[in-house]
Picture 1 (cartoon, chains in turn cyan, purple):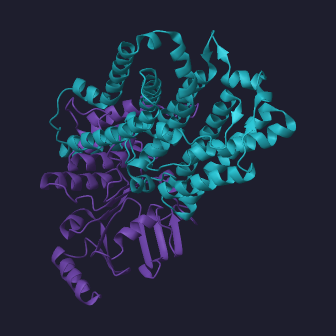
Picture 2 (cartoon, chains in turn red, purple):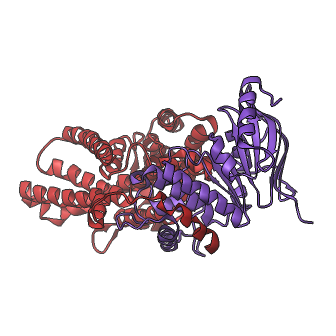
Picture 3 (cartoon, one colour):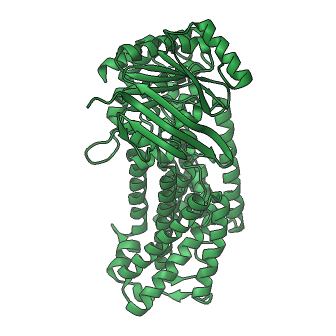
Length: 341
Length: 253
């Protein structure tokens, strides 16, 4: 290709260098969201330490925080990919439940946690195929399609178990249980490690694979992606499948943690998961967003959750604050985008 | 056997529902030939080139590339066969970085099938200095395309088309939105394609642009080929005269 690139020198002055500051400024602007979030994270931490020192200076709160945050962090990272791809998935709380229904259907007769986990993950993949199929094959906007499947899958879970919960006491002390929600290095909950592992996997998918490159492209400009030969539908379908898989996995973790399956499993996670993604700087319009941002976002949301309770506010406040976080972070992002243009 | 045409369309029609965009079109692109495609809005120029690039499938008719019948051409397959396109809409992803746009849809990978980000950035840097003439330190492979000017964006689309060893380059209204100076550079660039022994299809509204670079012009009108002329055999005035006649009557005579 050496020769033809030189011929292009004919077009070289097509480019007039844009007037811009030097690259430090660019670096800061490109990473402003993450840098800002790290500041917010430490700022909040300091605030909570000052507001409730006896709670926030003891390790207990951190263990609790590491035990519960991963449930939505694990879903927020694949959801980031969905939103970067220009889609939305609101059905993941119900996928958590339907995955657990599959888990129980296998676990109760066999007593095998590993097999039950596999069943849950399969149900998650199937739910992802359902969502992706509605979007890709039928052409329903994903926001609407997944509102539909959110109710459908919740209803299906309730019908299949007649609205009853199920105990998972039998699953305790099994190897899979220990691996998923046991404790390591003294008291660190294993789901914390899972959230890190999944963050790494999601980062690699998004930043180091063609799939990831195509996720950004289809969310940025679907027409361009198609013109340049990107298989848009396949990419969309895979993104919904990854989301389904992660939601089912999070459902298993959350249920094993409390050794019980509640038929309402997942309902509390819609808001915290969405808030994590948007706080993390992912654009509602698609095309931009980072896994690191969402990961930090999740743990900030988790800290706020722990902090609100520790400084003596009621749980009602959490919903108000999460809602506010979504509105403010999305608005800030939109305003910042406009200013760049 | 040396195939005589790089691309050949025989009897190609394309319907979008009720609308027939192309009717029984025969089109040929020879070895080392620049063919200009002229026609009014809605004449079918864009549809024709999107069939050549695999974006649209013809409703009927046959497509040959280098003498081989291609039954269903897709965009990745067309690119594999050495057809690269500079689209009218430029086909860039504006929020993404320069290097991602250069390798859009054809990302380089390591043997482990992971993206070779380092190589893509290096190649982008090289292309920027050697071919795009970006000299400002403010523009790096990490710059987002949305910060570029129209001419710069066009430069990116062209460099991208050239990077992948294209043998056939399709330019769809490449002068749109360019300044006079940028346009002249672009026309020079099309002549360079010819000098390098490659072939090109050049689509433009502007008859002067097309006439000045093409070996042959094909005039499309309402989805069919109204006529073809070797630029050596027809004067610019005659060609313009014929274009007016086509626009008014739908026929050249």
